[in-house]
Amino acid sequence: MTEPPSKGAAIEVQDLTRRFGNFTAVDHISFDVAVGEVFGFLGANGAGKTTAIKMLIGLLAPTSGSAHVAGLDVATQTEQIRRRIGYMSQRFSLYEDLTVLENIALYGGIYGLSDEQISERSSSMLQTLGLTDQLVGKLPLGWKQKLAFSVALLHEPAVVFLDEPTGGVDPITRRQFWELIYSAAARGTTVFVTTHYMDEAEYCDRISIMVDGRIATLGTPRDLKAEWKVDSIDELFVRLARAS
Amino acid sequence: MEGRFDRRIVRETGESIVIATLRAFIIKELRHILRDRQTLIILLLMPLVQVVLFGFALRSDVRDVRLVVVDPSPDYATLALRARLAAARRFQIIGIAPSMHTVEPLFRQGKADVVMAFEPDFAARLQSHGPAHVMLLVDASDPNTATTMQSYARAVIMAYEAEEGAHRGKAIQIVGETRMRFNPTLESVNLFVPGLIALVLTLVSALMTAISLSREKERGTLEILLVSPLRPWQIIVGKVLPYLGLAFANVVTALLAAWLIFHVPFRGSVVLLLFESVLYSMVSLSLGVVVASVTQSQRVAMLIALLATMLPSSLLSGMVFPIASMPRFLQIVSNVVPARWFIIIARGIMLKGVGLEYLWRETLVLSLMTIVLMTIAMKTFKPRVA
View 1 (tube, helix red, strand yellow):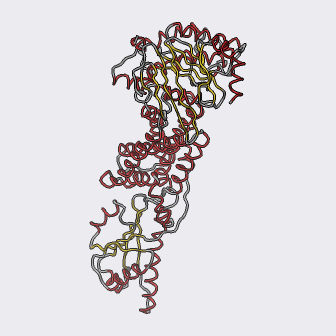
View 2 (cartoon, helix red, strand yellow):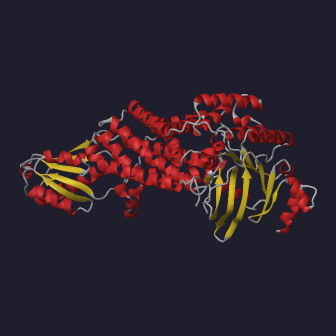
View 3 (cartoon, chains in turn blue, yellow):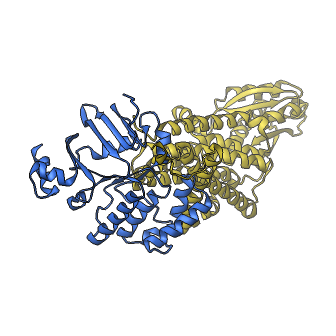
């Protein structure tokens, strides 16, 4: 199962499976994500998205199958993978009792950036986001999410995993958030994103829809709509989820 | 194309990156602690308040008093008293010595509780109407127990005095003199300070680490840390070190308060006491990490940490209730309570002035506990669920 990854693929998944006792949360899923691609990983709650992500970021060992992230095997090269990926979870995960700069300094330090790199990147980050240094807990949710995303990109990872990054965020801020995603992709970072907002799914280069641990369909939003003869991804999503 | 994955600009040199990572994490932990002013003030003032509050003690019953008899010239009177002591169920004669010289080390090592020393020609003095003298030396490191032991010994002497007088048809006189050793003024506070240090260290170390680690778990920040290059041992060390510093500050506060307000003696090495305190903090800190790794929420972690540390530390450690007067079952249980060992050490150093040569066994127990708990902590704290 440890065939060399094809060049140019940021994520390569082959028959990846995870069982919990008798329950198969992820059932032989296979897909590739190209470098610099924005890949939407959709599915209803309990479809197995989070389990799949956890295997890709090294928080959960696969039961069988293989996966490569940034050319590294998730089963054996977890250590190296950690330095090459960024991760933003469903829950807001910066420290609210620390200031913006203190949070940046922490993650910069953890990822081994030099003090100069940290101060350089934090000032450009504050500028891009239009933020002043303050306690993170005092920021509105939308700002927090944008900040968390920028912090996940601080060490310039090859792949960034975003698990429902825009949950509970207003439409305007969501749009700004997606602008950040595009600019990261334009700089060559592969973006792997899960979302419940189907309008966001339309922004992705390609999407997959997971149903009951399997990938029910995969392709560009336009191709999928044509293939399934639907007007929107929302319609397709509901149809696939209902069918299960 | 492979090179595209190498865009990260990082210091790759192994060792420096490990240190830099750890440093960033410890700075963050310190910021958490310093920013939460209320908790910090409570934690810093707690030892002071507790030392001041604990001014009283609880009485207790004592059995199996280890007695050494010093009998320079055995005669019928001393043999009769020895027989009575041996018959009394509360006493256990562990040695008979001809002079006081051999007795002192037994005391220091905690092998004897009471020494009863007859003066030479005891029977002859009784005979010649003059009072015969007997001296009682009592280990008063624990004042409650000391007074109780002293009255038991006196009771035996007085009973003999009365019976022998009645038998002879004329009163005899035995004059007893008591010396309390190690804690001559029977100050309860002397006894409580070591226990208090144990309690405060347990609270700061176990409870605070458990809370701080489970908070990260609850808020989801731990997940982010586990996905990062930070290793589980670095997370544990980063959590433990700042609290170790706080615990150390607490020991110093408690000791200063005890010394300045209550004039508690420091007969032994302060450096050794501080070292042992750090060791004891390590045990508690490891316990806190273990509690946090097996629980899912802050609230549960806090409750378990309280139940698992505070209660045994205060009730089963010998701090309040002497272990000697506990039921056998609890005596056995008390062996796994780290505070029990620390209190023996702290009392030994502060009140008896003994050093590692007598306390190495207790020190070893605490070291082993640290190693075992740390190993469990590292094992349960897995980044990747199999």
